Amino acid sequence: MTTVGYRDIYAVSMAGKVITMISSVFGIAIVALPAGIITAGYMEELNKDK
Image (cartoon, rainbow, N blue to C red; front, side, top):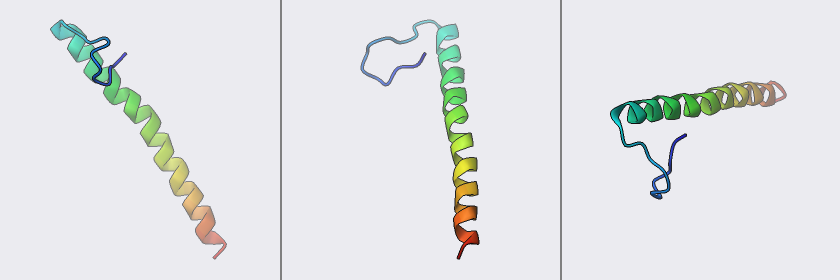
């Protein structure tokens, strides 16, 4: 889990900070990569009709 900076929860140990960093990067990648692929395909289909 990662935090958004509201001091609700945060990692204290170095291992916890590393795990948090890795999980945040992978979490963003899991959302951003498919979104880009889907958007590119959608735009391609829209431009086909023109």
